Length: 337
Image (spheres, rainbow, N blue to C red):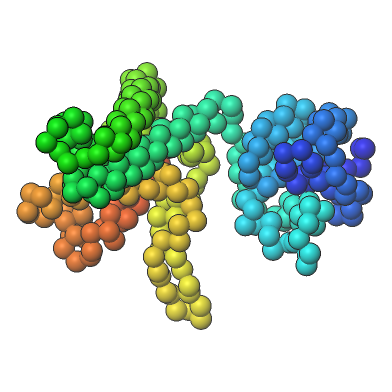
């Protein structure tokens, strides 16, 4: 159809809802199609605006539509929700996406390339393996504690467990020893995979100029640099470092009205992976300052002198985000003290 202005798609795995609207906003059709039919619809449709929620598989369909000459607009779901009319169903969702795509000044999500998404898969896999290893370590520590064996926290503390279960003087039933060995085997496998993924991230910092530049920021290592490269868009889309920090939600939540400004804590609505790692890196820097026992005579020292550590860590993470934006947009290394 040549008179279609916006083709709004409510994504799913097998059944997709497609709502087509004309230039004036009138609905031309709103029907469910199969996966194969959706591909045919996009191929047969003359170039138009293809709008979707920024959710699972949206970047794949975005790349597919862009290859056919369509103008793709990925809309954050939070901006679509206000346009859903009364009943919640696929047809109403598709119509709401079409309505939201008509709004001026709406912020869209950039379509990620396959290489960009591959980086995200590598990072998520690394984090998943770390979580699984932590779960196994905590389970093993809990089981051994029931028999009077207290194991230190973390992967380092688990190294002593092998000697404990092999010691005949330890009062452990044989069945528990066998189960503990199963845990140790699984932990060893996960540790090997984690080390391999971490080695690949470190190797990338040696050949990738952007990742090497990111690692010059104090508190930013290969994992954090990998997360920024995987999840952040091109930082040139942000007008300033303040906007990038706000995108990460490293800014206070506002509840201002009537000329009165009320600021609260961070809202945690931004990109959680990068925000978490920046705060962890900031807290690591603060921990070393506290260990020295003397606060430095600079901005961070002044913040630590009057604010709790966590508040100071968020403030430092905000500053790190602004520094990262300036570095990546100007193609310069970090000059922080």
